[in-house]
Image 1 (cartoon, one colour):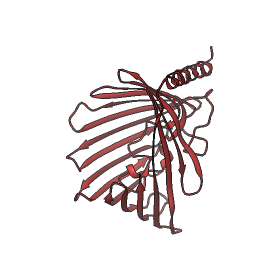
Image 2: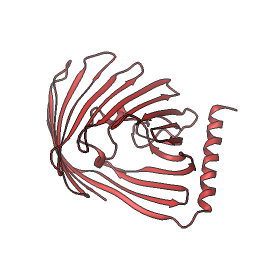
Image 3: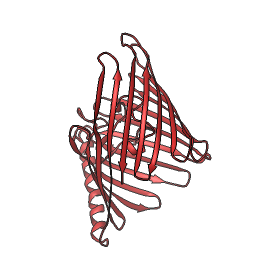
Image 4: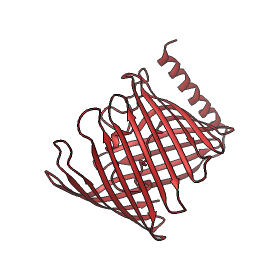
Length: 303
């Protein structure tokens, strides 16, 4: 049996199992979540740019059907609206869960959803890290560690971060292992492979909670035969409302000049539903690229 046929059979079997358990479950409990983000930014470079607009909005719905949980969301990125999440997860017991549908990649230290970020801009371009794709994944959680493996249509979408290429004949593979057995520390390692291009991807990050408000994190990402990306970030709680994130990040390309980015980002939490954030980032000149400075302010409403 060909590989893609086996994948299709496994995908359908998991979907059938989820559907069977959902059919026997009580009426679902439905909850909603989402956010809206307005960002104003200015880039002091050649040429300079300035923008102020609704930069992101998300609306999601969760339905619980006994041991099955379904989630779907719509996402607006400032120019268009996409179906973002669309998956169902079955609790198989003993720490094991199975998810089928369209979901976010395991990879990456920095969050996809804006309210979960500690600053406004990413350490590198967002498409450095795989984002959304469709497939099946198996996850296991224990007291001190968790692990998972996914078979998806592709690691990176064709010209978009919001979906894969839709072709399971040339799948992408992902796996991760996270260890939390050391007090206040998370050690996370992930590996992935784009089968069609035979391109391996490795991601290692470590997070350490100095106390309830302060966190230190570091990440190294290696794409086979390409760049090494890295970041070091420190978030300091200044008061019960104010925090400040300091970050240094950059890349070491296989060819060409390396670059470094310096970021400072204060955040003010007005309440559980509203956050105000600002950022200044500076990238010195490297190679033929001139230096640039990024200024931004952001308001985040979430529910």
